Every structure is written in structure tokens, then in C-alpha cells.
Image (cartoon, rainbow, N blue to C red; front, side, top):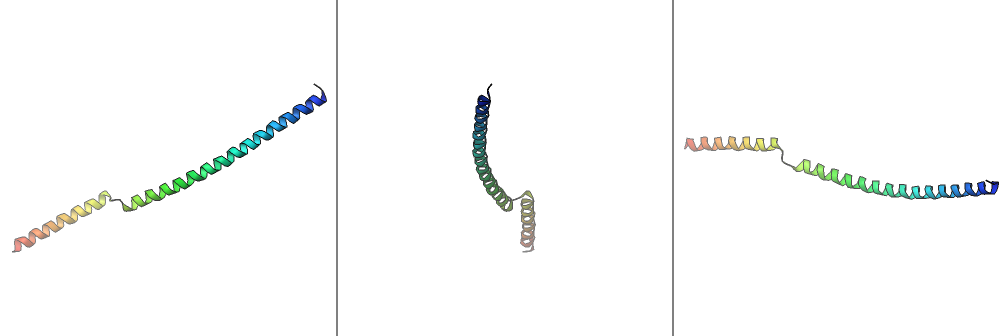
Length: 83
């Protein structure tokens, strides 16, 4: 292989490498946009889950209301028995 052919081959490889780097740069930029979008969606989902957790009725809440209803039923029964 002559010096000119080797130089041409080096130039060709360099150009291919540059093209690959440019393509990777575009891919990385696209990935950054996608990751940002995913982060925004996850943040919104976290906010919704927090809101649901803050506003949902828990089993302990239902037990408390059941206890209070029974307590008031007993009080009403006692008041009716006094008359």
C-alpha cells in the first residue's frame, strides 16, 4: 500500500469517525430530551400519588367512625331508656 493510499484510508476512517460522533451527539441530545420528559411525568405522577394518599380513607379511619357510631348509638339508646 502506497503512502498516498494510506493517507486516503486514514482520511476515510477519520471522516467515518466524525460522522459516527455526530450521530452519537444527536442520539445523546434526543435521549436527554426523552429523560427530561420522563422526569416531568414521574414528578406529576408522584404529586398525584401524594394527593391520593393524603385524601384517601384509611382502614383506621373507618374503624374510628365505626367506634364513634356505636358509641353514639349506645348514648341514644340510654337516653331513650331514661324517658
